[in-house]
Length: 335
Image (tube, rainbow, N blue to C red; front, side, top):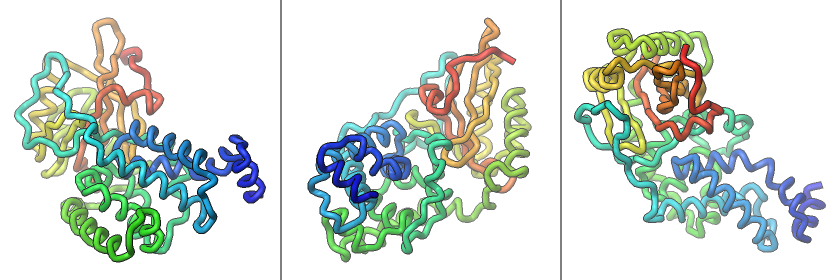
């Protein structure tokens, strides 16, 4: 059947090509997201990949699987984006009436975007190759994707293809028009850099399972504290080394005291919020809606939290432009 579809696609049948590529569309989008850290850039790279594959189908000689060939195209499209000088610049703080406290530091990764959990459906069940070293859920977390963004582009490609997807060194060398020795060298450097960046997370309690009673208990407490602007209850949920970031704004806050100052500013001037639960990157997430005098709550952003046991070890704030990706409205009636 696949052979018939391939013949039809080579003859110019666009529907046959779509049928050939469809089984790989979702996993290719996630691959592009890991490479780029941006949902929008991943969508663009996926479309570029499928167009290039359609236009270059005559060049597919069948010496590798169609899946491997598509990954080759997608990886090289993403490498071109990573090397581009036109990556999104940092943004300025834009919350009217709220002056943020002095940050603990300025962030390196300012173009990070969240990825809606429903789009992972079917992807996390894809069988991995024998070289894979990471759990699928770990490799979609914001912490992991963020750490990838500061590695050199080629190291990112090699680490994802080898350690996340499990392709063999020879396959990766073919995808990158490189040698096995070069791939192994890049992988060694990438593993070392990533290990250093993720080491603090390795010392924490593990996260509870997604949608488990343990996770839900923390989420309920977080929503209650946030919606009531209860700083003490909120701070009690945080680990000592909690980390707050807010791409594309480069301000970052580390530690309970810094987090408390940040949250106090958010709730200043009697600002109160409604939260709507969702999920991003395999983690609990919340659309945040500022209650207005007109009994309408207006979307101000999306918060994604990372858990260590029954505490929150990280919180990432994204602006309200991401809300539609999660099926969340720009505004809703106040509760």
